[in-house]
Amino acid sequence: MAVDDEVVCSKENAVSGASQTKTIHEFLAENPNVDVSEAHAALWEIITELKDRTEKLFPMEKQPACEGLEYWATEDGSWEGSMNTFTGEGVEHVALSWIGNPKASIVDVSFQVFLGPQIDVPHFIQDFGLIPDLFHFSELVPRRDLMVDLDYLNKYYAEDNEDFLALRGDERVTWSVSHGVYMRAFNSPNSHSYTMERSPEMIDVLRESVFKRFDRWVSWVENATPVPEDERLALMKRDHTVRTYAYTQDPMNVISERMLGKERTQRMLDVRYGKVQIEESEKAAGLR
Image (cartoon, rainbow, N blue to C red; front, top):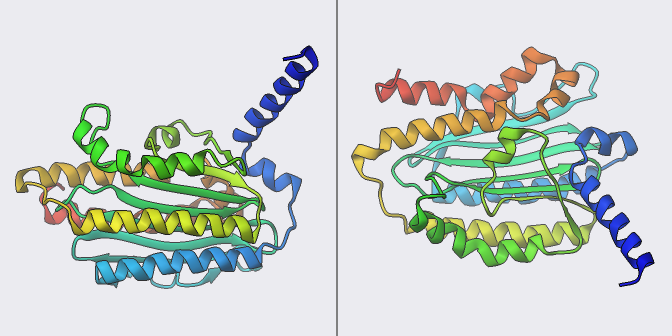
């Protein structure tokens, strides 16, 4: 390699590294007033279909905690969203939501399924963002210690490994690193966290990847081996702790705090991670 080539390569790597640690604040500062409504609608369609398919797997009822949040907006209309949460047999907490301002570059669209302790299949999380670039986060939340439980690691994450590597190696996506230490600890070996061009082409790429992962996850749920009765309380307690921290420790909560204030943001977070459901289920199990 020539010296000039080495210099170019070094600069390219520096740019790539910087883009991986770029914050949402920086993305928004560069393009603060982009109308992302069209992309928002396409991503919401994907998320809603995930919820509809999940409801066929687990019949669910809406949680009282989300009452009045099916659609909400700030007084000046600068911030709006929707929050719907559900509970059903075998599934503790399902959340379908969006928040942001589609006319001003920023939207978060998310869907989470947190299973009950009857089985130990990974929980399923799918988040999309518009900042105004396209952000993609997909996670299979482990419920065992992957560093010592090789059977669990190989059963779920090895099966998903080839597809993970295929998207991770796509030159059109850039790895996105959370600035929160806990959020990086939360990541499994097969966590997807990328930014990319906001385009119909990339939305189609993500749609295919998301539903392929989701269909595999459904097959795991349908064929899961029950967790022994004497292990379920410990698994439930661990699930609740992980679920709480996954949302309360996210450094990007400060964006909502600036727009909604700390009190309103905390209320939204409580509903999103299911604080009331956690309290009620732990009380019923004698853990409180």
